[in-house]
Length: 239
Image (cartoon, rainbow, N blue to C red; front, top):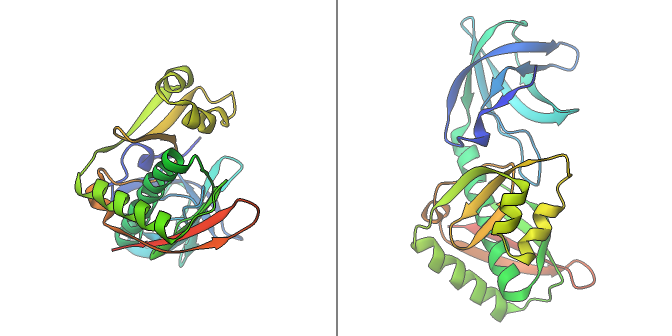
């Protein structure tokens, strides 16, 4: 039985009742029939939170993917298989990741369109994040322009939507630069989860995002590092 990933369609669910379908006492993890907790992937750290069951409470300290399964690592007493548990998300942490992830998509789109440089790596953090671009050699003026453009878009409160589309449909919708991103996905994936910053960007993604650009908050680009031939690392925080 696969775990239903609630956040794929609704990133704002903070609490949920689920059932324990597998337990590993030695490694201290459980698998749930449905979850609101995001497993670390694609540069986005895992969620944290708590579960309540039978009048008890334990921490979800980490969530990982393993062979297609979602493992919730527990600190405290571990519920038995078949137990009903209330899942409670550490919402402040999740919301910071949501804002950061949406910011990463927007900054990626702006740099791709302006400088034809693709995002080749990223790491989202609670307080600051970083992204690697190639081919790119940035300077202070370029970064100032990107920061100003980003913050201009933030004020426009542009919708950010989640949809599930057939591969052919979405490939027909995007420009050649973005088509490469979708084409990298295995051919076996016929339905793609698409994050759409309306009128600005469409990108395949399994992460969590806010509903509009206004929620992201303004960006402050902290600086750049040379990470190799035509590869720049840009770090940022949100205000």
